Image 1: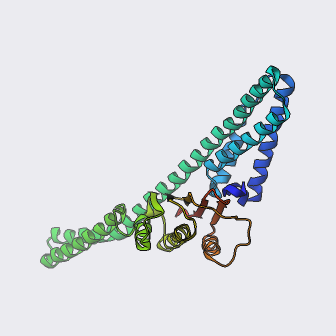
Image 2 (image 1 turned 180 degrees about the horizontal axis):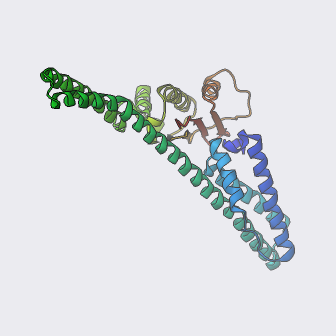
Image 3 (image 1 turned 90 degrees about the vertical axis):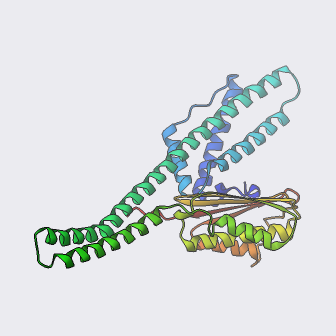
Length: 325
């Protein structure tokens, strides 16, 4: 899994979970060969939801599991076909095995995806609740006092105080201040439109390189309002270095940057179709080392997947703090 840059290998506990599931799948396949019946497909949903949530917290997305499942499928099937000779009985066995293997794999993937969805919905609910509490505080602290003071001044006027004219002027001043505060609050609620976004910054860098190849495709999903300026700047520097390496060394014709920004994480991929490299070689104090260091300072990670002749995949994960105050 290291050669494809899978995040599953970045955590020993998660990797052991994968190994356990692989052993269970292989056991089910062996049992099906012994009985001649396709089995598998029944998994404990609660356990897999919990497992998916743990992986979500570590920034491991469901597509990592999908890739691992496909690799396991190909390895097991190739091993069996290599052992069995030609003939009707052998082909029937292969069919039974393949059916069991696919059911065992993809029922787990379905359960894992549902668990990850549940995790995402939970995180979004936390963010929405925090936003509502923040808005309530802003309205109470910044508008409540001003409006109360204006009401007090107007009550003085209504009571027939001889200084009522001054009270009206004071109330007008306070209400004007409240309108200014309201404008500041509503401005903060607006989503960013254009401006200095991550996509703009990456596009500008590609333009500054001044080369026609590789062609760069940049996609950014989600809202930057969930990310502090400091974290966004560091994320840009990491992705810029990945792009710079692709332009300088990959000999690729295409490099694609995909960034997903969620309330709890940033997940990005930089993939090119170039000549690749051997990631097992010692990593010098170069751009790759710098990318990994920057991510680790943010409690995140950078994974490199490549081999000569098949291009390079860079996977970046940055966790984001959830404001629950």
